[in-house]
Length: 106
Length: 355
Ligand SMILES: Cc1cc2nc3c(=O)[nH]c(=O)nc-3n(C[C@H](O)[C@H](O)[C@H](O)COP(=O)(O)OP(=O)(O)OC[C@H]3O[C@@H](n4cnc5c(N)ncnc54)[C@H](O)[C@@H]3O)c2cc1C
View (cartoon, rainbow over the protein chains, first blue to last red):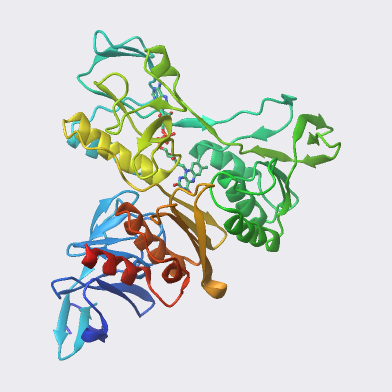
């Protein structure tokens, strides 16, 4: 553990297809794990910054994750809000793969 | 807040709050503001929106009737809602039904008066409208269809709505949600063509090539439907704004986005991609208690509309992939659309790989 952060196992790496999303809940918080079409994994806050809607129900298009409710979009590599009504960036978390497991740093 | 003053300044956008444009001097390429100031333009965008349609019935001014368009309207309506409050909603369209849902959730007693034979006549087919009606009735909203309002009067401290058939209803607050009219007066006064909105071509230009329009105020030809349409939907306003801006800078691209609408009713979501038209064939897909999808195929087999009502998780992805198929003019097999075990993602990727 460093800076109070720890690596937490979120899901099996092969449980996610490219351009797929997975919800992960931990310590009363919720996250979304993304696998890009290139095969990289990313982790962000789970709820859209516009309304409390889970992004795991949304879709992935290129490097964009789109909220299922009002179509706000975010760049999942940075968490940056890209289209209204989303205008507040999402927090992004560090990810590593160990064996077949996806870990996120919380 | 969507954007801060700092961000506007950073982008080089001059924002004049509380100022309206009074007229357009097309010959001089300038607009005249409410204070009399003239502002020059090379290209001009009209995004004047729409306003609530007013009832053309006798309405006693002291009766408490209200409409909903702005944030201030919403705050004012919310402050009057609560247990003990009787609410009458005139109009069974989206605005009326969303207010009904919010009011009944806050404990008010709510009745919706709709003139037509069913709810949501303009937006969705009967099958979908019936599901939405059932949800409202389960939640305690009374719905009266075929209710033609004769006049609105005041009876002691209550507003009284009299119907043509002699029935009357009383309420503390009457919300009128009978549609919106596009704000075309500025354009009309400047001699621009209008037709159910400021009339645009496919690139969102008005009859003056230096003036464009976007959003609720305009009508435009849509090549997927082969007709002129006007939309009152948030996502259309966002996307047309961006498309008009690109064309004002010379892109000359036709606007071809699939119409999209959502409405939140209680904890359920309605999403509609495309346009449902009388002449097209309907194919339902039942998702059990989680929701219902409905597809619409044109005579040539193309998917032209899809709607879903139910939990967001159950319907959102499917309607989103259906939108992609509508945009591409895909003609999926009706059996596949009706079959809940075939995902729309799979169907649309099969189509893409067959191109
Ligand atoms: C209660 C309500 C609920 C809705 N819910 C949904 C929903 O769930 N889903 C959905 O897709 N859509 C919904 N809509 C529709 C959506 O809000 C509109 O489609 C969208 O706001 C249209 O954007 P617009 O920019 O074209 O017009 P508007 O948002 O109406 O903005 C136009 C602006 O122009 C200003 N203006 C007009 N004339 C002048 C002038 N001469 N000079 C200066 N300023 C002027 C007006 O004051 C206004 O601020 C809803 C609308 C309402 C009213």
